[in-house]
Image (tube, rainbow, N blue to C red; front, side, top):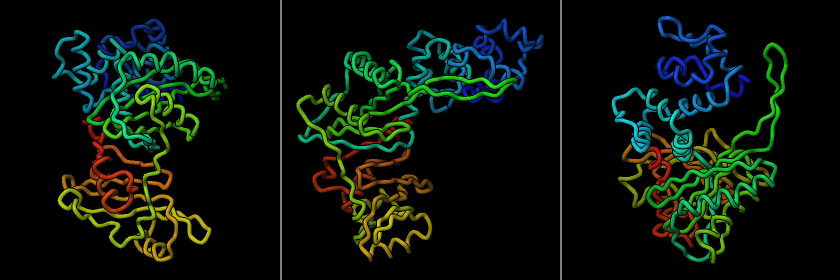
Length: 382
């Protein structure tokens, strides 16, 4: 099962202090001792041999704890771990090694660890499909009761009927004008061969995590689906969330981006955003010209001028943004004619959307004032 436990490495086992590692491995002490791999008289484990042993023999309980430690033992989550431990009645841990703190939390509550992991997940780059309300509507975040009902009465039966198991969980995060809902659920069953002393077959159901994002100020619902572009599931999420937050309002796909605005001579002008945005350039695009679809990633400026002159149809454009507040960092932002946006973690989404509105890359029925976004990704990572 090495492919399922690749996170169990010599590095991870070395970074977890011996006393903490012994506590994690306690449920398997008998098996590890019989394999002559328990900590020696000097109180040390052999991380290389132990990692190999665990790849093939780790119990689900120990694997879950090690995975949680692997996922949250990062300095950017230190304050989240401290706050979680305090809420669980643990003593102050501000000066404690991050791996000790992560181990303590993983042993106390895997659910809290999963909550922190989901916070990291929403800060990563995702391609969102956006849906807009047909009537202007401000939204409120879901209450815990609404989340529990959505999880237990709606999503679990849906995934079970879709042959994806009856597991579902929701981790919610609210930042500024955004409410994020990370939906963890199963996929269809998969089979994978594992070659150890002999060939064995493992059947398992991978975990998938989708995101539904509510823009509380504009009423827009954005959806990211992991490892699938199934329109049915996106529409399902939107409809179920709509029933809760805006039951009398219809939602439609918000094809708000206009890549063909790159035709304009002033398309990349900074304009009123001087002092906030240092530079915007096109670094990639997909275009339809004379019946042929082409993707361009090299010599972009010259080819862009050529296709602009021929009035080609742009399907997708990736812009490189440099912000005045952080001139050494570059952010690639992609928009498509299908209304999909791909904005990386840490990017100032508010300024990006203002630039698009100012330069005609956003439809006029959504003004810059109406669609003022605060960057949930950046806030999440803060």
